[in-house]
Length: 372
Ligand SMILES: *Cc1c(COP(=O)(O)O)cnc(C)c1O
Image (cartoon, rainbow, N blue to C red; front, side, top):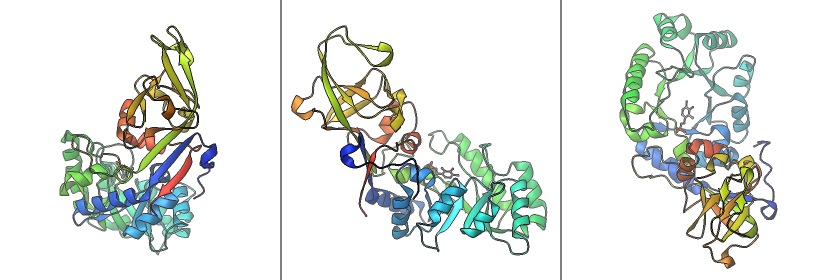
């Protein structure tokens, strides 16, 4: 997959090593498929499969039985087509870009049409022989999809619908990953109304969280993303997903600090007692977010090592005062994401969600895949 931001330097030269467990992603897909209880299970692999590598993940999920794939951009679909068998169905979530229309047919991609304007452009493009498309209905997010007034116009007569080959009528939840269910119930009602007006094709509604919430959320084809990659989509219950990503960084230097010394830019951390500080080769340019300043931590063995001072572009300082010096030398690896600190905890400490941590994973890591 030509993801140009990923250089994949050799392990010995990389400041950090990202390990993606394809078996875990496959196990997560099977878990979601079983939970979907009869609805067909697709895979959302936008943004390079949430940073994990679409060229590895998508073919592995094909081997598991996944036949429908969703990406955001047309260009992602073109790239994905090259690594999947011709029978795979590839859906483009972001709709119909003016100027890109011909590429959908050329690469056998299905656009999610989200406005009358997009629908009209698609009809004009297809002429007398409709090509497969999806209709995206907005049920309460005001992001993409037909707004209610356009839905009414579309459903009012067959003038447009008769010229479309509709595969999916789809919508997206705003709050399926939040415990409070009010917004979801409103969207479920809106989607039922849309489905009654557009009874053609199959219904597709649930994201990861929706799948686990129950049948009313699902439709006929479900679209899990984040849960495939190990994050807990329903954080108010225990995570059933298998962690799929490990990130380790390398220690560059270990130094002694005395009371009164200050650490990193802005001198925001003042040393109060004799300490040992390790500088590791990861920073916000690698997607290790600057907002981990203050609350972030890493692990050496099963001991936590807090971040000291600000995370910088390429480097981060860790408090290794309590670590056996033999386990903490230049070149040794430190766990940033892994068995002791999962992606959801890193995200929480950075004040964000696992989606942002994973999709921001940097291009300077050495990438390693386990599983086939
Ligand atoms: C990203 C996305 C998904 C997947 O959502 P997750 O919360 O990652 O499971 C599903 N549908 C649409 C329209 C999306 O944009």
